[in-house]
Image 1 (cartoon, rainbow, N blue to C red):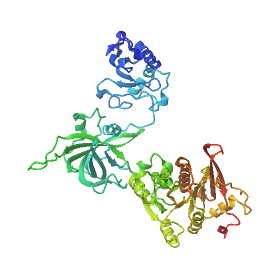
Image 2 (tube, rainbow, N blue to C red):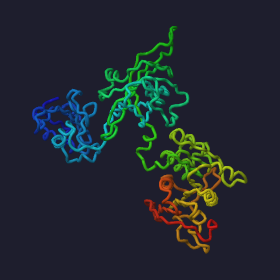
Image 3 (cartoon, rainbow, N blue to C red):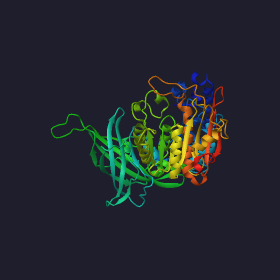
Image 4 (cartoon, one colour):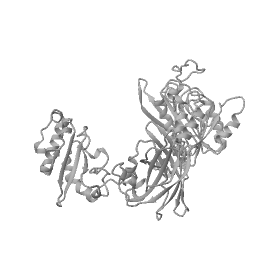
Length: 578
């Protein structure tokens, strides 16, 4: 570091606009920090401005700081760190390495015409003293501890619903799956039970286990203890690891002795709302491949942090409260092509409890270009591929796969009864009018709501239609589209609905198919999911059938989606009135 008064600006800071802005920053900081301003000369030669200085506060305190200007400055803000002992860091707005949060985290709070000197003058005292305006968000300690194990592929699952206040120690029953990967030892685990020191049960897991924690995982008991004075980690050194990797109990798994230790600490989970943070320390002794006569030989112990993730019911749905209506619901989807497969995955992703899926087609390289899954599903029945994918990736959703092609000489009623058993809603993505008419009849008989989705052959438009069992049905929709004389009805067909000139027959395929891309079709799939969420959230508001027609083309070119909404009453010529 060199005193600013002796610093000679290198070409890297003089020939570019950004470099000259950095030099202007130095002048402003020097006007306040004076002789305390030091510049890293070697870094400056490479175009990086790294400085240290003492900043005076109005109350007489002098605060030692280090600042680094990113190469994207002035569009993005400089980073500022305290240089004092970590024991003097403020409780809030400060990371474990002394990084100060002088502005809100959102990048919009920093403007290119701002200077660090102005920010320090306005906000430094507030940050150090915990005063002034602040983002309404908590600062959970586990975030910083988790960062030490970030990207390792390891995790331990807990539930935010658990309440352990009043208890200081005990044991946890953990399901552990260990493996070696190219990046090292990976641990994937879930806490099944939390027990008090006397062995009594305090909390237990109710969420389903993800496939990553397989049936071959080992169940073991490890210690937990409370430490409400646990500080932020200052690195991954032995002293830091010693705070949390304290346990002696180990389990032998995949050629290693593994010890897990859990620390529970009171923390601010949300703004001014406190709860328990979980920190998991791990110590691993790998077995040497050639054991001695006295037993397996071990390498040295390696300590690390296993990130703790929260996957309870409130954790999974917290970011998207609007989809709470999907919990506990069963939805049937008929047709798992380019429209139905994305809709099924979205319903699972957003928390649908059970999906009943019907199709009988096979995923091939040609149709996979607009299907939801890729090459790993080639040669697989669509309903089976989706079942495996959904139950692996979204364990809170169970899938009933019903292989069947509607319209066979026998079996339709039995298979449809199996599909529709106990469902709350039916989605028709078959894009086959005859199937839609049949489903309309069955849903009306059962008192079920039906959502039909289809696209025009040239994909210039499409529709998502809600059918209430006591309002307009799919046959009513056909009457509304066209009069008996062949004239347009009061609800227009989707753009391009009768244009079959673009249909093609790919080599090896037995049928003509439409031309169009998944990124257009998904507009219809996503609207189907939105409608399903709305219908299940507020069923009393959905008593009349409704047609939502989208236009995706203006004859010359593709255009942003434009939607039209029409009510669909029962048609006087339709048999659903009887």
